[in-house]
Length: 356
Image 1 (tube, rainbow, N blue to C red):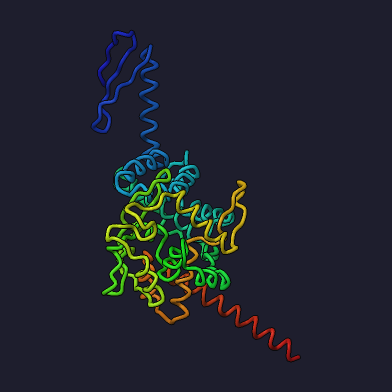
Image 2: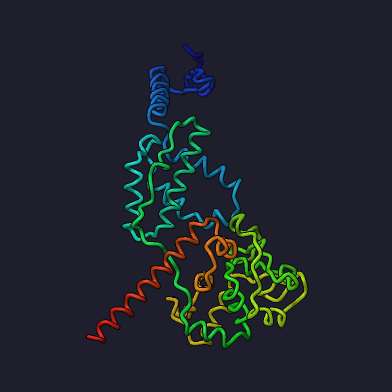
């Protein structure tokens, strides 16, 4: 029946043990108290039938996630997570059927999101469902039964053009040293910013990648790399060795900034933009300033192209580039093969047309 009493503020209170938990209900009349209790019981019944509201489970998942992953990971995935929460807010967990989820993934593709981005949304939703099963007593995760549409385009960054590469090769001076480092190692920008001279092993002929920089409010924060596969040794190519030896500093100095601290975000961006403007490859950034036409990540794709052209296998390329999954390397190699096939087809068509 539950215990009833009148509080000092005049409200009636009823306490009832529900599912092993004492719940308090208040009201000015017993009818109001009973109505609130019945509403609570009805909500519990709906939770049991349809599952908790998505936003309740999501918020609990996110609170736990903040204690488990790096701040840089939270920052990079913030937009995907927020978009996922907004999409399913107001739904009950069991209302998220495979059909609804599949339709959502198609909509994301129609909105212009590339295959990798759509997969990230899928993975976030699946993680929320796993949390529901473990911490809320949920009983089903539909996400493994929903595939990311195979027809979605891959977001493959194009490597620098031959003209741009030639310009960098001709100008290793100044900030060109950083461009050379990126061009001939394929490491991520954050990995390059975190590189210290003690990580460059000239005797073994490798660069040890074990940390990364991300910028929090523009200031550098040195942290662990993106994934466990990011911790790796990258070979020092013969073409890069003399330049590294020329710039070699104290063991604890950072390779790119050539001092005891990494670049801030503004220092890196201004120097990168100025270097490319000096080479003639720049464009308006929309704010009245100028920006580089080439991003650091394009050199990473450029190294993937070099590995492919040199006949390096996918597994070896994955280890050098530090991809978390062989799937990423395979998709890049597949894109390069397709580009080669397209170019060959164009040449063949031109040859035939010229002979007729």
